[in-house]
Image 1 (spheres, rainbow, N blue to C red):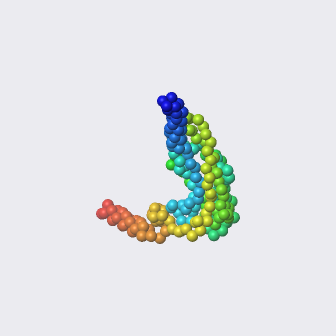
Image 2 (tube, rainbow, N blue to C red; image 1 turned 60 degrees about the vertical axis):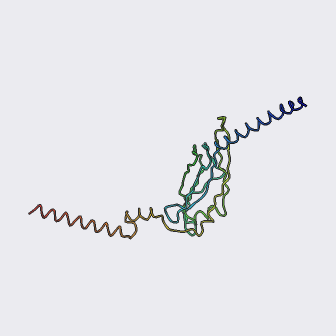
Image 3 (spheres, helix red, strand yellow; image 1 turned 180 degrees about the vertical axis):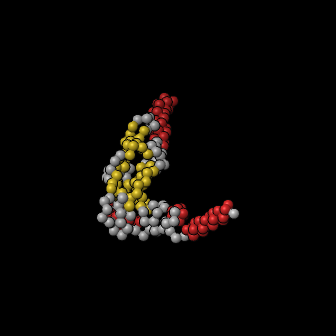
Length: 198
């Protein structure tokens, strides 16, 4: 009886140890794995503009990122594509840290819809370092689609409106205030000049 328990222990113990090591390695591996996603989203500041976002939502650094298909950008036109030439991202990105993103001006809804139609399936390919410091290749899947933005709101952010107002690009109270302050400043200068002459 004791011998059979000892034999069972010799069999079960290495299996248990191997499972514990494999579980620990997998947990650490998950902490070093990047996850690169690519998508279009409305520009947070300017109405009618759409950004292309490449984001690493994983916990490891992605290196030497390439894409299975070119990423359309600079596609202009609100209702339909205009005749301007669109561009595409087809080069490698050398480095994208965890939680970081790259933003590109993708264009406007009509121009992008004409270019991506019902969506483009894109696979970001990259390399990363495993816990054992060896290089490993990774691939994720994304869908470039603009259909969900068809009825999106078209107003600027408060920060953009304020910036435009201060630069005089839209008719707001700031323009009137600037004119009033300029008039007051001019009047004070004239009074100062008259006082100096007297």
